[in-house]
Amino acid sequence: MSEPERLVPLRPVILEILLLLHEEPMHGYGIMKQLREKPAGRWVLGPGTLYRTLAEMRTLGLIETDENADEHPRRRSCRLTSFGGRVLVAEVRRMESLVARARSGPLLRSLE
View 1 (tube, rainbow, N blue to C red):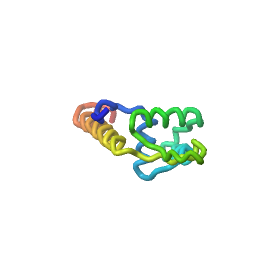
View 2: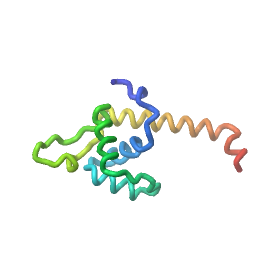
View 3: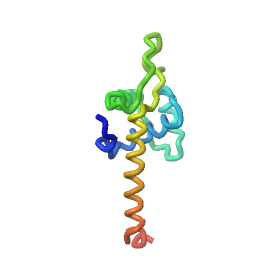
View 4: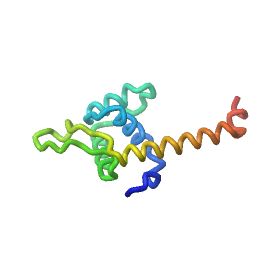
């Protein structure tokens, strides 16, 4: 899949993980911890959900992991791929466009 736009819109948790991995590579426990500590603090994922999501993201080519056979799978470091970075940019641009449209219309004025 070479066109990043084909994957957007992203599920919110995938967007959050991509944003984290854009900052720095990290392992699953670090991702879980960061998701809990971010200001929104709404992403409390159990290990099963997190690792299924990371596996899906690997399959889509969004992230890659260190494949050191001696390491436990949960300690493998995840990092954003080039394609994952392009998907992240496409999603942020999509969201910016939505916000711009909402700001330019009567929606916000009607809620004030």
